[in-house]
Image (cartoon, rainbow over all chains, first blue to last red):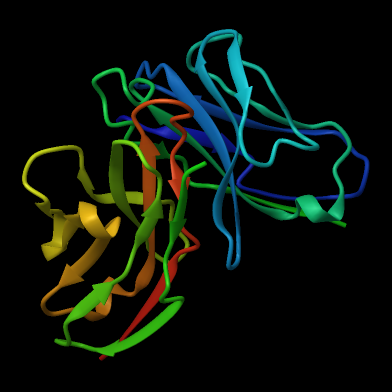
Amino acid sequence: EAQVTQNPRYLITVTGKKLTVTCSQNMNHEYMSWYRQDPGLGLRQIYYSMNVEVTDKGDVPEGYKVSRKEKRNFPLILESPSPNQTSLYFCASSLAYPGQGYTGELFFGEGSRLTVL
Amino acid sequence: AQSVSQHNHHVILSEAASLELGCNYSYGGTVNLFWYVQYPGQHLQLLLKYFSGDPLVKGIKGFEAEFIKSKFSFNLRKPSVQWSDTAEYFCAVNARTGRRALTFGSGTRLQVQP
C-alpha cells in the first residue's frame, strides 16, 4: 500500500530535549516536505527536499533541521525544542517537484502531535 | 510570494444544503490549485485539483471547484452536503516557476448538522 509513515504519532517532551520525527514514503517520490499545522494558521511549510541531499527552507524553518540521505526518508529534527513548537506536524511527499510537468500533488502522512512542556 | 485566503473560517450547514467555500490566491504567474480535506483525526486528502483546461473541475464525493482567473479564485462547491462532509477544508496553490512550494490557506471548518 502506498503511504507516508510518520513516527511517533504522539509525543510529549520537555524544553531542550532533542527529538527526531521520522518520515518514510514507499512511493519512490523525489519531493518531500514537512508542514506544521496550527489553529487558524493552516499548514505552514518548514523544510522541503527536492531529492537526496537537496534540502531547502520553507516558511518557518527556525528551530528545525532536516536531512535527506536516502530517497525514502526525510526526518525532522528539533535540536532544542521549545513550547512554541507544540504543534501537529505532517510529512508529505510528491512524485516530482511542481513545474516538472507535474502538478505537485502532495500525499500526506497521518501526522505527529508534539507537545513541548 | 504566493498566498491563499479562505474567508470562511467556520461554516455550519444542515444536511442537503448547498455549499460554497471561498478561496482567493495571490500570485501573478501560472499556478496549480488544489482543495484538500481533513476529516476529524485524519491526515489531509486531495479532494480535487486544477492544472489546466476546463476551469470547472470535479473531484471526489460530489465536490467541484471553479477556477476564475480574472478573480484569482478557486471556490469549492457541493450541491447537497451530507453529515459525513463534516471536516476541515484547505485551499492550496503552487506556482509553476520560482519557489513552487504548496502554500495553504488557513482552512474552513465545515460542520454539517443532521
